[in-house]
Image (cartoon, rainbow, N blue to C red):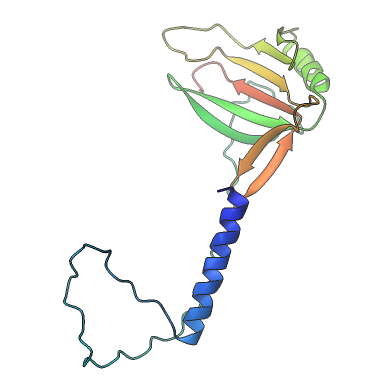
Length: 184
């Protein structure tokens, strides 16, 4: 079920429970079929329990945590790029994703100037450029230290879709950074 439909369904269930709680008609949990109850059910002569006080169901506020300071200062990040997430790459390394809605060519030009390197073109379509940041050590690394920029603005793509909770956003260009050195 898509997250937006699931959220709407959860909201409707919450409203239904809230309405029942306010009218005093609160559902009572029952054991699953086939399970033995902890105590025998009350017979028809048992007095009805006093109605529980009306409960108000409130949704918890959504708290967005600020992303951690993701990168060592040795690797430049495009100034207007938005931090998306960091991932465990294995072997004690992490890689960091940033998104931007600026053109791919502008981001590549920034990294050519900042890293004083032309990098290398990995693919022509969709365009992808890699700038090496250090030597790859097979015995201690999962990924080579690098900056990889990928263009998601082709005619067939609406952009890279990033979903955080119930928020969706698309980015024209994605920047993946695998930092070098012990500050992995």
